[in-house]
Amino acid sequence: MTRKKNVLLIVVDQWRGDTLPMLGHPVIETPNIAAIAAEGVTFARHYTQAVPCGPGRASLLTGLYMMNHRAVQNTIPLDARHTNLAFEARRAGYDPALVGYTTTTPDPRIVPAQDPRFTVLGADMEGWRPVGSWGMKMEAYFAWVASQGYTLPDNPWDIWLPQGAAADDIGATSRPSRIPAALSDTRWFTDRGLDYLRGARHKPWLLHLGYYRPHPPFSAPAPWHERFDPAACPPPVRASSAQAEAAQHPLLRYYVENVPRSSFFQNGRGLGSEMSEAEVLRMRATYYGLMAEVDEQIGRVVAHLKETGQWDDTLVIFTSDHGEQLGDHHLLGKIGYFDQSYHIPMIVRDPDASANATRGTVVQAFTETIDTMPTVLDWLGRPAPRACDGRSLLPFLRDGGTPDGWRTEVHYEYDFRDLFYSKPESALGLDMDACSLAVVQDEHYKYVHFAALPPLFFDLRADPGQFRDLSADPEHAAAMLRYTRKMLDWRLVHADRTLTGYAASPQGLVVRGEGAPRS
Image 1 (cartoon, helix red, strand yellow):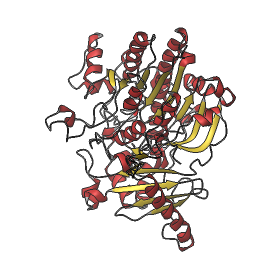
Image 2 (cartoon, one colour):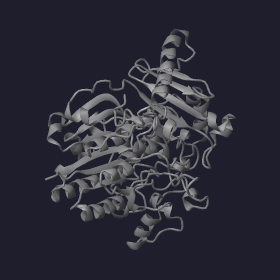
Image 3 (cartoon, one colour):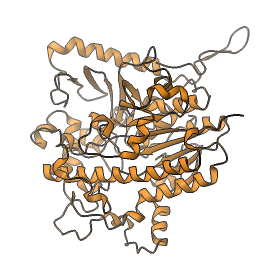
Image 4 (cartoon, one colour):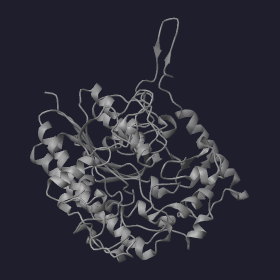
């Protein structure tokens, strides 16, 4: 009898990679996620390849670096020629289900310009069957809230205003949100996931279970708003002032001087960089509360799988699309080049007995979000497409140790062209296609290359907070050149290879490298 194989891919939004109890975070408590980690492997140094949501999710679900998929920002289309996890799972006989969203803008060459998906940041990626999509502007979620007897305000987003907020309360409040926890978006996503699972239990399934949190607005329903004490939260890692921070680089200056609180608090006014330390700590406590709420709801999903006898047939992956600055470097959001935006969680729980020896362990090797798709395909017995830039993580679970030829560094990219809600391109006087940066980072150094702005170089051992740029230091010139070469090597090796394994010959078509692992 063929064993049933299920996949539960849990994708949270804007969850920092250092915010996990099994990695020593001093405040956060997520017992259900910790229980999954106890049965699986936690990847401590896992990075997304791009921010914000759209580019990060494109890399997560296509297995491609941003330089290859080129959905470089929210609102920028994803080329229809690229395959993704859903399309590949269909080759294995699965009907991949989507709860949540993928922030994907369709290819305008194959859909008309009047398509309403071009009026939002992004819609659902092709190949997935939405079973809990909340609509392009959260219509489905807001409709559900109203159906429960809750009277929505004229602006539905005002459900995330703090209860009884005073006029001078401009963000980072200790008050709970107006919406009760029983009607929160976290609860809604979980209910949609459980609805699907109840109907799918008699067949193999693959479910992308997405959560909006801890994405802003940073406003948590009771009792989660007071779950953690702000005084116990770690203080922000930042320069002595926003002005001192901004002096590091022109791009950093733009964000320090232009990111509004209103993008993170429904009642926000002023700049994010103007937040006091007390406000940052209050924000962090709320952020952790939103995480704890997600954890409780994940517990409901795990309990259902155990009650229905499916837990031991299910590969579970817990990860995020990107991180969050959370006041570090006087920044809010997922922007720029600091680790807080790119370091994300990754936990893989393989029910197979071959993974028993590694349960509860923590891997320190560098891993990347592009490894997600080949990991799932490996579990399903399918090869990764040759174009895929990632590698399966299952050898870490089943063999122990680091696989031969594994990467010794991570790479990530950021595109800062003008969008309708942010204008760094105009402010910096750059050409649209020159608004890009790429990072190579290992245990010792971090090199940030800009297409049209000065580079940055950090010694991570001497300066883990990345405050001292060494790019103009003669003593570090040779080291920086090595990392420049590393980046060039990376781009040469990983340039799009969709068809480069095919070749004509006197004997006809020759195919090389299909499904081969990539370093």
